[in-house]
Image (tube, rainbow, N blue to C red; front, side, top):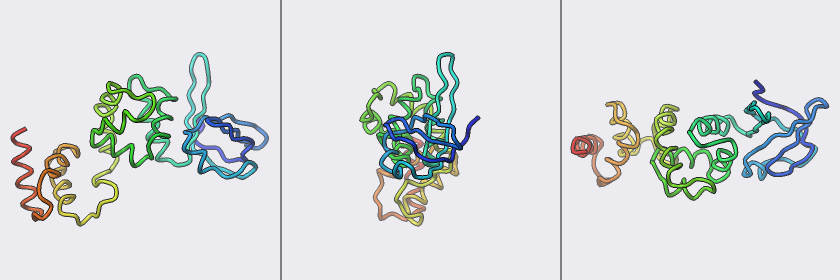
Length: 193
């Protein structure tokens, strides 16, 4: 397995990057969004890779961060999503936004990505929600840890509720409630479902 490459950029031909590693040129397919963050041709670069061997091809995918590669690997495990669609997902939304859309079951944001229809978005949510939740995302991006609603969500998760269930229950409650009251009312909501 080729896990990373470090070399000099030969050419940038989106979605392909040509990287010279000690005299060997590699053709690497990357998310289109990554090309905006690449240095100029001739510059040194280290990328993280995912290597795929198929009957008809050997494909090398490249990522600027380990988070991108991890999410790519999760996406290609979903039935019906191959490398090209997974790259489109990473180009369509930033890693944090894509994780959040999957965690919250936001089909509207997912179907805005080219190549993702309603059925594929649903399949992505069903198959990846628990895997992404298990990646340690206990709080929504951009929220403070001492936010009463986030504390209530974390408490509900510790009781065994999924992140999405807890968020849906807590989000419908007034923000001025104390953590204990948010938890109590959320438990009542969850018991009715």
